[in-house]
Length: 121
Image (cartoon, rainbow, N blue to C red; front, top):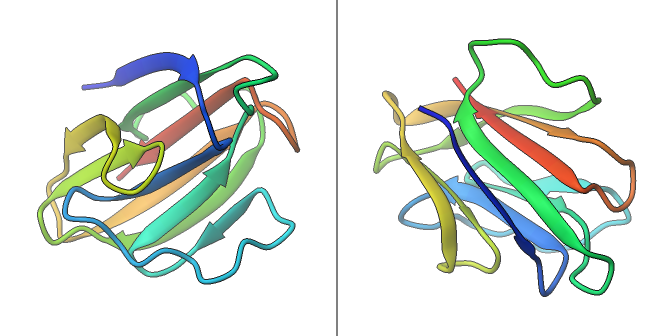
């Protein structure tokens, strides 16, 4: 199943983690994506610039036509992957089959993407 939303992101950052939450990166580096073993932090379009189109789904189909920015594994002990605007403010969520889940993130722009695709599996 794939879920999708388009909204203004108040802080220009998305968090991808298990539904129970993850450990956030301690530093926000000048990179579009920072990650720990339990959370991926992704920069996106800031609310003053417009809306961000966010898609979450299995990465078993055709890949987006824009660059891959992240490919890694996060812990998903609750077997759910969630995307939130701030920790605990979940906007998209899906069940996953494993307690360790491969996450891939594609973005359509190097700084302020209008489209972010989060693929799991």
